[in-house]
Length: 313
Image (cartoon, rainbow, N blue to C red; front, side, top):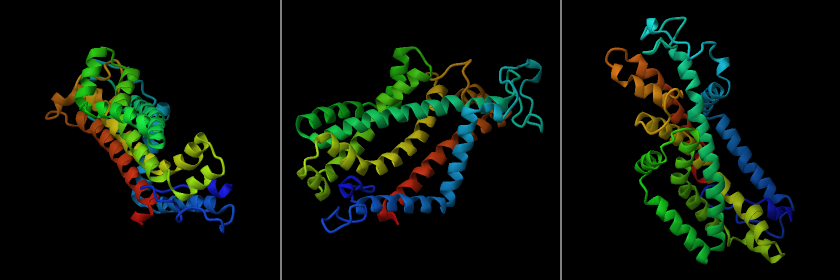
């Protein structure tokens, strides 16, 4: 039955390599087609300079977040007002902030909270939203109705306004509460993506063939139907990582996100916005890192979509 278990589809729900397995195909045909899609996508991404540039940038930022000591030996909390707002130099490429702290060290250590929040929130929406979307699309009926109405409730909440209200009510602005709020407001989107993919693929021939030979609901969902949603879910998850990085910085800038003495790009932007005309580098450096990170995730998501969907080739 390996021809049944290996079948999957690309973005949009179309079966990879054809209409699904047929009795005349070899037992490994489905796996070969699936492997071919991912292999072709990998080759296309490696040859895509935009994707590779964005990927390298994200690797650099991720290494800043995970191992800041590799990028700077300065202590971001070693401050002296005698060095307040000293311009960038060779020894201190980002200069010093208003408190006399090394601004480059602040920028390096500021990558961690943004990346941690984005990764945790994205993992949560993929897990919870993916499971709920799978159940809604597969079972339909009252299960789909209940889950869809819950999704509609969360969809009705404006993202930014809802996040501000929730964080203001919670009155605890830290990595965990921000991650929770972003998860609560974002999971319905990925659930709807998975639900649509499941509905479009659950009645395909290879799924019906697996059901005919006695495959249970669990096997049908996780071995035959769920792989159809991997590609669109991966594309959306990549893009939403950048959205969450931007959301953390926005909430922090508005005063409902992370608070000092925490370090993040949003805090750097918020604390130094008033010095833009006098010392624009205090604002340009964190803004540049933030924009580069968000843009890289978006470009990677677009490239993944093009590589995983044969219609874009």
